[in-house]
Length: 220
Image (tube, rainbow, N blue to C red; front, side, top):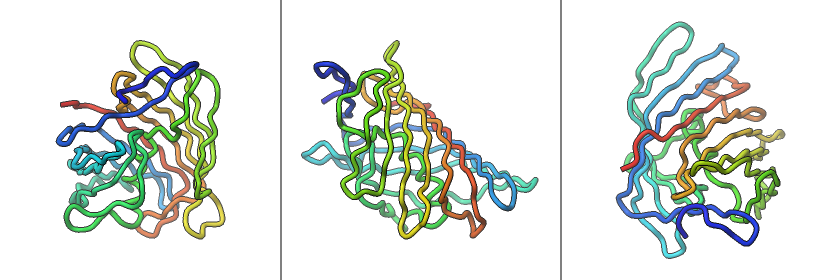
């Protein structure tokens, strides 16, 4: 399966991974917290390390050039260790991530960087323009819809609305995202999202809302 392909009445999305294939993204995160706003920007690369028989892949994600602006100060913290994450052919993570090497990203910062996962296509069903598709999560942790908003000039635009239950949290984390996909490859071109509700704290500081923007800048 390569890119978005036509079903009888709609489209389906799926990537064909190749070991060694790499993409680079710019990522910006704007956080509203009890300590005031702070912004994080970074570059992020994703490299295919392994491809499974069913089409899943192990993606190694590495972060560089991180800048944090908070309370009038600008910092350049060391990048977290690279992580290895298995994903399906629609870019949705399967199971937890592991370090590659040095351990995965844990705690608030790890959760912030993992917001990029919302750029995946959350359904394997065929999609029609303007028709919401319910998210089918067998574990019941994710509820919501994904809607194919438009298809034009080789780009499909999807709108995702999710409620995600994490651990023993009493309230779900809410995600509203807009995703631009390359129809030839099903690769993510751009993602813009707002995350609210039950959010992980950043350095033990409560967080009310996170805005995320992720855009592919290199395809080699």
